[in-house]
Image (cartoon, rainbow, N blue to C red):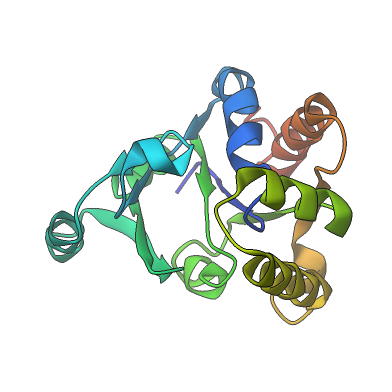
Length: 190
């Protein structure tokens, strides 16, 4: 494939959706498409530009080969449309909102993918999760603990994962993402 897959990961509350929304137009200008996820819950409740489907519809799409990547997390199913393969073959780069736990499978399918971990300081993440009010304190603390373990885990990609800190100004994080996309693709493509 001529394009590169940019695989964005990060804990719930790290600002992935905000980053993707803010970077969408500049990414398109760089020749990078932003894939919409298919999720088994209402798209309105997700807070991202996603396609909400029923479990039965998700299963049908999966069985018909409609996904290039799919996984289950937090009681939901997530999929990335097979159309990203067409974009990649045509030389377009693609940013996906991926799953940290699914990274090894994604790397098997797309060995040249660029893994990007969006990080955020614990106090900022805790505040964002509290403000969202989707989970109780115990669940928030469990999320924070999982985040610490993943961020410290060098066995899943280690030095090969690009890290972007989103604890501060979103505009700065957007600029850092755009710089990363520019340097991560093959020379002469952007």
